[in-house]
Amino acid sequence: MKLLEKLFAVDNNTAKKEETGRNDACPCGSGKKYKRCCLDGDEKKRRKQLGLM
Image (tube, rainbow, N blue to C red; front, side, top):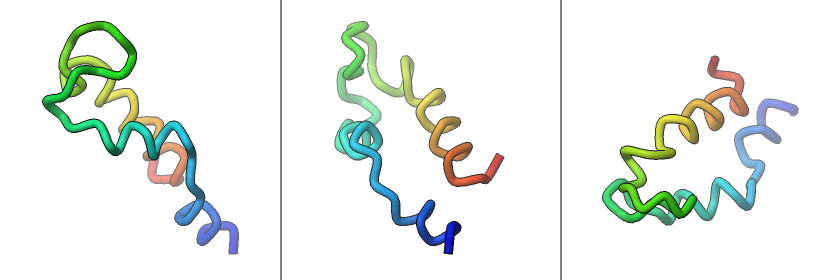
């Protein structure tokens, strides 16, 4: 049951970042593209939350 809860849990920050495309400006305000700034860190956090790391 906990595995299903993890898979279907919606995090407001994650939902917002999914709307950001790889080539869009980073939502953190750095002025860089998202893929060059926060994408790697966000992917690592998402994998850790899902228990894949």
